[in-house]
Image: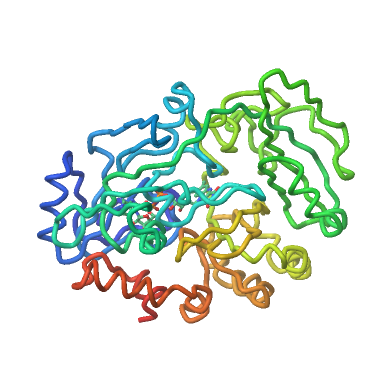
Length: 421
Ligand SMILES: Cc1cc2nc3c(=O)[nH]c(=O)nc-3n(C[C@H](O)[C@H](O)[C@H](O)COP(=O)(O)OP(=O)(O)OC[C@H]3O[C@@H](n4cnc5c(N)ncnc54)[C@H](O)[C@@H]3O)c2cc1C
């Protein structure tokens, strides 16, 4: 479709038409008539996961929904809204979500469809907060999926890679609001990380380790901690050999920290500390491609050293690499399904032709640790390799075939990686 690309600009959508319905009824009509149809969120994925040859539907003009159910401890939001829009009103009402990604710009529905995650040893990915979803399915009707009503099926529905239908609302679990502080440390030696990773990642609610892989060190460590009322916490000057930063930092060398959420220990609401980047600024570098692989937590150090061993073959193409931890979850197609995980994220220079030759090096280094690539990022692993990583895949394909018998919501990405066609 002429002119419409993803956020990074590396994928031009091939859809024949773009629809921007303003009501659920209009959306139902589009879904009913279409031969092939797909929802697109805020377009932050780096591959063709959201594309279709038929009708692409954006929900950003749909009426906003923000329905707090204080008795149930949930909020129901519409399928087009972003985390950045719901954070402040949730906080004002006294509530918070379990986790956020590095940026608030992404849509809730698109993030949950791809198992988007933040960081934290005990923090599962964003989709684990979903307790119900309304979905426009292939016949144009609305199907309601609820965790309490059918917990087994629900685990298959949430991380849908967009293949079950168009999500028009999501109900999210809430917790009491909290404030956080963010402290950054500089130059954490790799050997310290290898020796004491468990202590390092357990030292805050959310820990991110950043390295350019040019030296055996993590140039930055971001620690996000909850700050209880009245807390007089003072961070140590030193952290496992790293030194506390005295000025705000951007994870990417040379970029302005003005785009980043406040650091230097200044406490603020959860939705302005959990993401690295501010809603009204360009996140990350803005000119980039991304890849990310999740491996079981127990292999974290071996996997880290395996990447270190091949660093000279990819570092020239790298802007920054971020290492985070994610708690296991029961969602069939989640990258953290059944395993506490460590994620190796790579922000690359925007050159796919060069990158395509480099990703197999990293994927080969990680292969012994059964990596699962992030659904929304770039990878070159074979569909067969991806499929072997998901033991619930047969149940998921059966679910798709039942909910969408004509394959309306299937696209090239789903056919490749989910159905192996
Ligand atoms: C700068 C940057 C930073 C990032 N940081 C992180 C991070 O910290 N952690 C992380 O895990 N990921 C991160 N990502 C990746 C990002 O979270 C995922 O790509 C996510 O899917 C983006 O959501 P989206 O709304 O843009 O989805 P899109 O890319 O628009 O779509 C993704 C999938 O969701 C489906 N979808 C979207 N809306 C609906 C709907 N209403 N109903 C049904 N299906 C739908 C689409 O069909 C598609 O399959 C980052 C990406 C960027 C660009």
